[in-house]
Length: 467
Image (cartoon, rainbow, N blue to C red; front, side, top):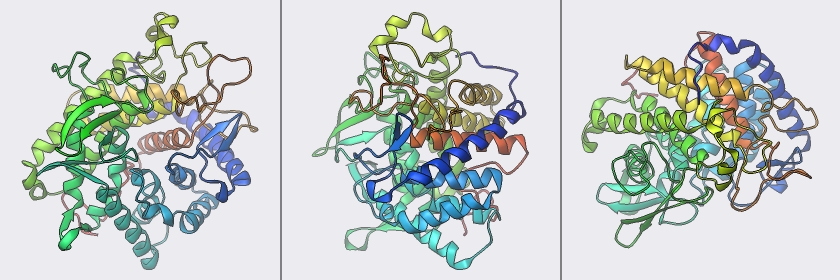
């Protein structure tokens, strides 16, 4: 991609104002047709949001989007919508034992309400605060219980595929463990064993760094620095790593770009969180510097890979090894084309990646490390493209916000319009939500407001974890 090295947050002001208007229209449209009994909306089919049974991982994005809309615009109707829907419909997600997605569902809803109260954006209410905190503590413990042990100090949160399966995606659901730990919670195991949520957070992040991300160090024939594999497979009897795999990518030896984006967003976000913890909490893991250095290595590698391998505007195709890309010629040296006849674009991966680039750049700047501005401008470059034609939806008859997203290309779940060769023109809950998050992040930078994190709590200073 070609990074616009002059772009600043304020340059997006007009686009951002228009974006929130379009976002409001989308939320209202979905709410007018949403039927809870049919399941959470997942993606659009011919412009209308529909459910897709696989796992219930998108409900938090639906109601969390209303809370982000309130955060950005101060419109109380969206606060009421997000809060009411969270209270009436999100409780089953707190104790959902079958998914690895607690950070998606519960931090986007209960966590957002807790954060808004911390920031003074909504009135302090001791009972509501305790309700949100108890929900987050529960969610973090349930997430941590979905555990595969690889050794005395090694393990990971396994996916819905089973105990053998580690996904790239789950790195961003570590937000759930982070908040549970911040609130002083632990997972109680057999014989009343107290299991640290921070311990499991760090173990999972370490396993992901080791088995999901490549560093150009000769791990296998396809070891390219910053490449990400969707899934790693283990022998659960002896804890041995067996092979790379994928569920939604083209192959284990290419990079599914949404998996890459999850890693790009997840590690900088965890770096921001871990920065706030005192050094003595890391003694069991070799020290705080060792953990932060590992995560910094991951963030740098994956963000560099994205910048090097995406099309000119930074909007990705769905997989770097998708076979039809060969028919597109020198596709990296021109903007992505969602209307081509060979391979779909996945704008949702771009929205997630944009936030990752912004956070990594901001982290570097906060620590007086080099190249921070470069990554921020890379994130702004992607965002600038997504806030314009043909990605931002301008059609009031279409319920989506961010167009040209892809859910599951190998299974053929995505809608292909009549007369088209590939899917395009549709939206998904995670794409719409993460575009809102990225825009909110930039809006706060633009207006010199408190930097947006999932754990915002002005009562706490770095190193102070009191609540």
